[in-house]
Image (tube, rainbow, N blue to C red):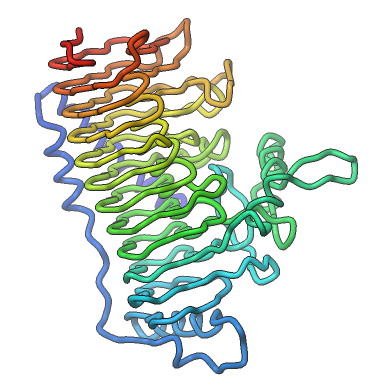
Length: 461
């Protein structure tokens, strides 16, 4: 594990040095995006089919055993496609394995149980903190060449009538009378430096799981399907590389329902997807506080393009668990439009989480309307004013953005006595419907440049 980590860090360092040097050599950073794009290659699979109904004995009300048996046999036999045919299939969590394409046929529905007694306990990371928790609805660990494809639907059945939502949010009353919840207990374990293998949440004492969590995997394809009613984050690639997420519809408005959260990942393509979510549509992350500093692996080389974002806290966010850093992110040709979409681009952290975010390039974005700002930056996230690890965000480029309505163009909330936000360039943009009293709200930022930018019909300087 340590050797892999060193190799990954060296390769990322080499690429970052070459990308940073492009600014001084006047090389178009979008040419660098093409280089990254060509490195992201979806996996392919043998032409062999395993239909889950062939493994179902009719004795169980759930298809879990049949699905996992088909996946295991497919993987052992060298790989292929595990087919979920037309119909509705109740199931407990599914474990994906190497060289398997889990394919949902048209009109196929995977309906996941909410009975926590049927969830195994696995190692994962929740909001940037390492722990053991009940299994995500679809989970893979250290697998290679995996996919979920097809036009079917995956339904997590999380709503306010079951523990996936209300019970985990309201919290439980401990023996000492303290009203808390399991996620708060995890935060406390992290603060108290409780060892990773002692942070165990299972059964009724578990934390709401991710829908899809692919942990330390390589060569991933997610394509075509629809996700709704997720208990937590919808798609969470973690410490993974070579990830393609294409034509996925993410429709879920529960608590913490981020659409896609690549965390400490390298070479990720998110394209032609639809987001309508209860939290950030896309949130790029890299670990939280000491856990993030232990791994110290950034998210890097991430491309978002041709996507459509509706409701959410941000169209594309970086953070707030970004302790390991993030660099080289490209966002282009997206449409973001909803009165319930707070921000278009959002970067967030604080002086306890820290993290460096650099080289963010955004172009060709149409904004019908958003609630707050085109670019929002928060360095005091969750009202944390002080700490030893100051975040640093720089080299941010916005180009050819057309927006019809927002409160601000820039809402940059940095530190009043420090300039940890630097080098923001806005070019060839048109921002209409901006609040007349304050176009920008800027604290603790330096070197902000506007070129050929119109705000409310007038050239802005």
